[in-house]
Image (tube, rainbow, N blue to C red; front, top):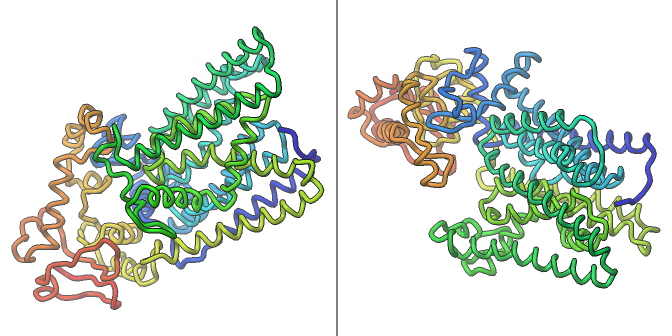
Length: 547
């Protein structure tokens, strides 16, 4: 797609503007970092710094987060290394990494889009749309979520796939260094697998890559034998394919939202009953809420996606990249209702369609004279909408960041609770926030804590890994009996009479109960903790009790 010719200096200046904009949009607006499981990543990074290695790895599978009491450690190693190399605290290091991820995300989106379109203006547009989208900003805005690294790397993965010899042969081009790109692709896939379990869904992207190659070869063979279609026949054929493509995606979504076929009993529609504007359980309301959820995550420019799809199918000279994007969107459609995980994958391809829609509109002969003012309006409206959505998410009920009062309670725990003493809490997220700051032990079945603290032997954890059960339950996360036992014991201590769980307290060295009265999804601690034990610390919201 050829649009506006730009000089090398203009391209570099535009890239610099996008980088500066990304840094500015990630300037902290909260007293402490944002997120939930990010604090768990911060705690695990702390243990890596203290011990020099990830003590929860029990086998090759545990490097990829497969098995009980384990979690992919890629992000935690990066966080630990940045903290040690810079001398910054883990909290500040989280901000540094999030900002760098935003910058490199823009650069990777630039090279991916340029590889598809061979056009600098379109590539700059892609870098801007990708890096300033609400979804990308949300998980890279002072957030320790490992998903941010994965989303940053997906455009690089697509770029490497497009550069492999398989693609170049399909396009009848000669290219030197195919082995290098194939090796880099393999290394990147393994790296992404060690960052987040979401990487397991990348096999669908690889499937789309292989099918795209086959279809592209078939198209070339047909063109050689039958000749190029006339404009009229081409337009009819492409509009037919566009409608079939859209109907198939819509059909898969409808099956998921209506519990049809393989989705029976999964109730994937449930989370879309209440949305940004509408509430209801009928299929139309649920479908609208899902569409709004995707649109608010991808940004206001997602409206150009429809126009982009039309332009893509109308284009007579389609390269391999176009086919790859369209097929990836289709192959991922059976997972669209899963939520955030699917959005991360889908966005990597949908933003390309958004780029096509905007570039195609600006390149229109009738609009070309006012293209620059339109581009300025598009940039301002996109940045403004993204800022609005980030503010909305941060100011939602309960917020999604560590408050000053939570941080003060965690600081008290850091100063006065020993590293061999354990606490229980009435809220898992709050417990992770405390352990991200304090050195105490946290009694929970989640993640790798039981292995780190020695409550579970590594050999026991290995025996709990059941690949057959994972396949049977169609899940990469299967709760083991040991995890259920620890969860039961943790709940028993905080929900039962404190004098009746002395044996459990002694086994886990539980000395404290740290509670949060305003945490979402929390439960009330048993009254005996407050009536029979004494309070060490209270700020009116969070409190620490000596058991």
